Length: 563
Image 1: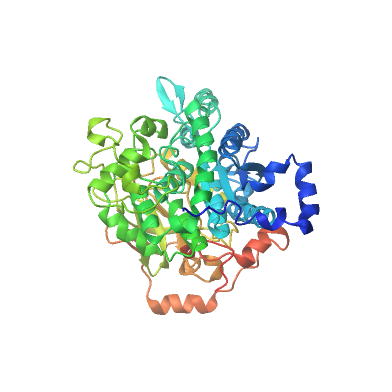
Image 2: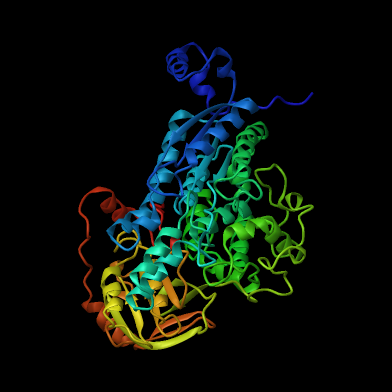
């Protein structure tokens, strides 16, 4: 006789027995009936918000998940968490709160799930930090869970070409360089974001949704589905049903989020040309799951993984094109056949990666969006972790779509993103320069701001092949060029980037994975003895708490690692 599954491993503590009559009374007020107390309770974590197009439709998707879970035999309860818009926060003080929001999302979902004792969780995310924030919470709580991506935005059309959010950032640089007029700038602005969904290229949102699918924590094809489609709503309903099956099986996130699964996720990120932010976020997710993952794992996997998807930035196609070409399963099929991913990893479907990929068509028979393994876009992955006397803890670069992989030039040092942006717009940056933006790290920023405004201005002014940039901040998934972020240790804690002076010669070699300042160890030691830590930029509130708690970027910039 088969064992009866425990459908209420967590919620029974608040629904069973005479002593829990007060708990049941409260639940009855939310709509529970007698029969519902015998069913598993599924929490639906919704990041719905009107502050960003990435999330403005997620309330409707949450309803589809709700209906699917109810139909399967669970009692669904929807609750909210926050989001911020990276695109709207970009280029000003608001971006300091973006990475912080990842921690708030993770903490808030953990708090509600911990208090309400859900037997399962379905989390829905849209904008960049939603995905890792939801996944960190799911890993911490470790009850049967599925992640659902809100979906990618459709491209805008202008002059017969696709445009997206990066198009308008680059148009600002073109306008500042007097390459386009105000009328053209307005035209791009009005067409770049035509409706709901996350930014359309292989930027951070689509990168992380793809990583989570490769990790096995979302349903196949879900990472690339456009936001406003019947397909996305059907996927949400299926996720609601499937979490019930996971509860029946007792299959938990940490059973899925293994070291081999994280290696699959990294491999897929390299194969699709994902955002450098994936390094930061996957380190954080692995930490939450109790999996040992390091910066060197990214270099090791990047060295062996060809770039297969020709995606923006630096490529031709948007995520909607990738979806039509077969999505992440088509990419994974190429990688599996080449022996580059682990096919025996279990997924939220209840099947292994290899089982999920049976019947998936080979890329070479479909489309130029996904190249086959014998004819890659690049022979290696585009994300490189660099080390040297300027970055003992590492720095992260993306080398796709750039002509020069080496650079040697004088430093022009800025203490904030705003200072560097003003210098660019006033013509102070010239070919051969190395822009250094410091005190923008996790603690020093605080919040490790993205530099999309600066990198887009560099490209827009035609300096992308002649100017390099290094920072202890980070970059948008839409950034490209010879730019190195996540430099660790950061300036605020005494890292070498805080010792650089104007005119110091900096040498970058992406081939050798080195980032060096041409100074003797004696000179660096002398400067270090003179260095004094800056005062924290905030004395109260969430940013001050973040300064006190956040770890190095090389450890994922997490706030709950107290080892």
